Amino acid sequence: MADVIFYEKPGCASNARQKALLVASGHSLDVRNLLSEPWSVSSLRPYFGETPVRDWFNPAAPRIKSGEIDVEKITPQAALVMMIVDPILIRRPLIKVGGRCEAGFDSERIGAWIGLTSREKRVDDRCSRAAAAALKSDSGTEDASPSGD
Picture 1 (cartoon, rainbow, N blue to C red):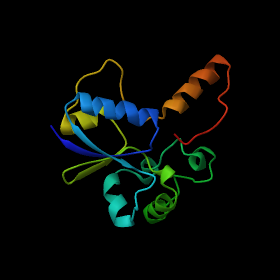
Picture 2: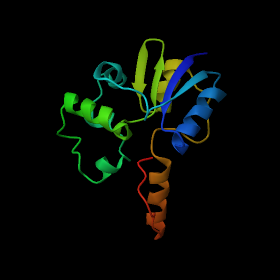
Picture 3: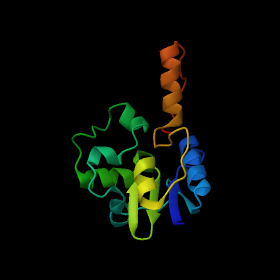
Picture 4: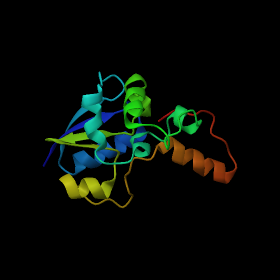
């Protein structure tokens, strides 16, 4: 099994589910705080590989949800600088195993990479609070606060 470096937002329910799946799959975790890591362009850039810049961002971040940042128009360099200054913008988790880095949690991709046990409920990188808010909205209740979770 793999030794996984896992950058999370402490307290994030989605990250907790992701970590539980990795541990249940036999992987060991070195859990780190994404928000307090001293990121640089050279340390952050490898996590995004060839993915489009818009996919580098945490869609639940308040500045993304409000439209303050247009992820369709931002350059890679500007995106990295913004993320270094405001790490809540970074899609999470960031995962590193050996020399390979990934941003976000796609169960199929990670399963093919390092192996995951099967689960009835899919684990991904969608914000748990945003999903709950969408369900509340569909049922006519409101979510009181955006968290960037």
